[in-house]
Length: 41
Length: 545
Image 1 (cartoon, rainbow over the protein chains, first blue to last red):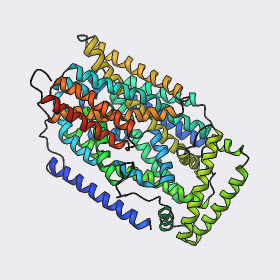
Image 2: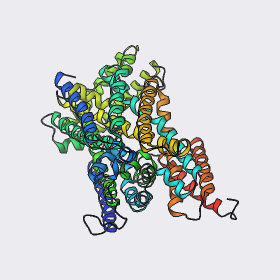
Image 3: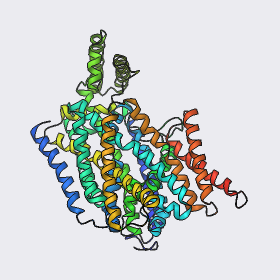
Image 4: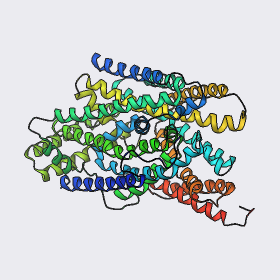
């Protein structure tokens, strides 16, 4: 079994991947807000 | 269902079961049977995790929920990416490093045997109650809509699942779930494209979105905070995160998925993929429900979608007048939609909602209930009455796949906990591996048979089924709390952890019983109560805690 230190296959480090996922979530919330605002009028 | 649908459905079910048996051939050790020799690639784990989550009733009722209440349910999944980050960072390396078969085994390494036993017992109790319901709920809905005998639906689904799960163990479960998730995705896309295609030629997507939005069906983001409201941004982010942390971090049916990873990195990738893909998946399922709503703006649906409730309503003396009023308001709404007069459309929609509420109430009274809820029947009604041959079979295959994936994961994890945390820990500690392998297979058969029997019985329990489902959700926060203590509070010892679980459970039941708080918050309350109790009990002088 590999160790905890094994690097991810992209972005270089797990911290960057977690930050990317958090940014993705922020983008999803922004998109949902725009979607709701655009059509619920 | 037409012959082509039967071919698609039968071919899918048989193909999935055979594929699972084939992929898992040669499980000759307990490690292979329960953990797939820790050789699973991330993409198999990723789709398997998603498939375990998606039960048939979620698949059926989510679309109906969107039809009735809009897309706000999607916010429940907003906490999922955050939970995936936390579990990947803190839980995955610890579980992998400990080399455990179950999450609760880790608790004995960290605390003691009684804490492990209590956590295992809570899992067996809550999942054991839920597994029969997971099998019976889709059978009941399919029976009502399609007229299939529910006993046969339950038996066929249950027997297929038990056959490949008992035969191949976790590898069979994971690889069948991999295919089942692909079938589910194909089913969702087919349903969405078909409903858009079935809209009248003059109705384009912008017009469909305007109508759905005007009726409040596209409310994917609700920023207003209300603790009694289940679905808004805040409950989704905070409550949803705690729910996902509890489910993915402490529930063996999910933990076992990423314990099979060939490395920490592979397990993390599987979980993080779920954090990325789950929200769009739910969005499209809910969007399908919103488009079904638009379809029924132009095609008159029955006033009540539940066939039995509709028959009961038709026998009422006031039905003719109610149905006439429903038809009249439907025509007003359709005319407003055609003119794209959104103010008039909203007014007609409000009147139509009011007529439908009266109809559901009257149908409920006729059936001896306070009110009938027909959201579970909207999507299947649409599928059966409007979708072309072949596509119906694919959507039915997706619903069966969703049911089977959840059940196989549940009976597999129940068997694993029964074998590892109960049988091997407390009854037969020093047997040969072949003995434990055989015990695992028999326990899988036992839990499968138990699921089938409780499913057959649960069909007669009505509203108790819902109560059992809710009851299961009362335990998650406590389990999460004890794992938080294990990971982050090194001063807390076994007895304090054990007592804090009992205190946490008492707090959850008290809040649930005495307040109207939305149930998503109970996970957070249980977790915080366990952590606070554990810390307070550990403040005592050494030897008394």
